[in-house]
Image 1 (cartoon, helix red, strand yellow):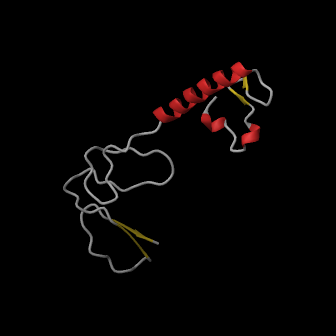
Image 2: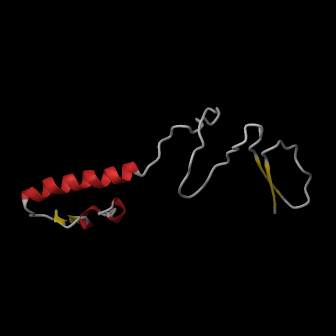
Length: 108
């Protein structure tokens, strides 16, 4: 049973992977349930990438090409000769800002 199938309402979590953990369940079920939870969390853990190679909040450079999954995103120039990486958003017809190779201009 995947962690994503667990309920955020504790009282609704009465079984895990078919193991009854409701009130009054057999005591041995709790041992098996804890082992199952540990296995489920490990599967989730293995699916989470490491932060190795990401730029820190204080700045720096990428040492590896990071990957990203999920909502949102980040801007990364794979070419070290592209010093830019800024995103400009402005109304259509505005004056073009001073840009560097790797910058992105979006007009609306």
